[in-house]
Image (cartoon, rainbow, N blue to C red; front, side):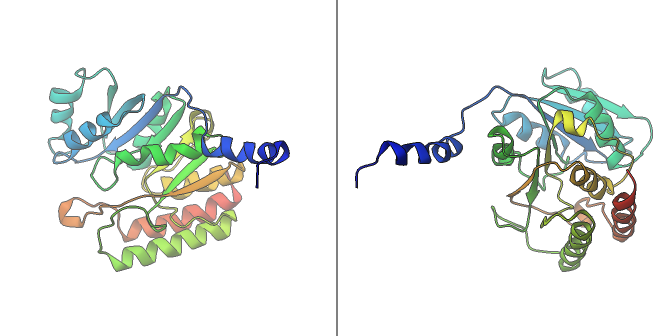
Length: 254
């Protein structure tokens, strides 16, 4: 059946949506770092290889191993797209993210852990709902499919599911992975939010606050190469209890 002008007009918005026009933008990659001497150079190289206009903002959060020396010797001042800042004492992941966000100048801001659990090549997929105008904030999700996933830590998965469910109850969202590292924000949104949490409770705090602002939130499936505690994993049971408190608190205050 030949396509009429009316049919063509009705399909036009859909076609434009599927083929959103390219736009000029810059991505700010904020990278909190604490005791990552074995992975820091590798993750910086992986992020720099991604063919997206970007700046990388690293905040060393008072590392006790050789990370600070590596950053000072091999990174600081060596690359035009990398900025390095230092906390004199360890304050926590949330505090390091807060410092980095304050230095960001790009159009969009993504949080990138300094280990190798998350793949920077997935920035393209994370940015798509922002670039085509659908989203204000994009969460990755380790539980929607995506690429390869390392199989371990049953109780971590249970805890994540419980925390995400409780967060959803308080925010009226339907996220599948509130605790995920990969969150991308329009810069004006994340810089317009007062963040207070210093540790891993950054995740439920920022989730609650973008929900309160009625941001348009999307999820994108991502891969996950989780590590265990012998490889440097840091989050633990006390962080789960802290997350419950923060989810409850920011339901009622801002």
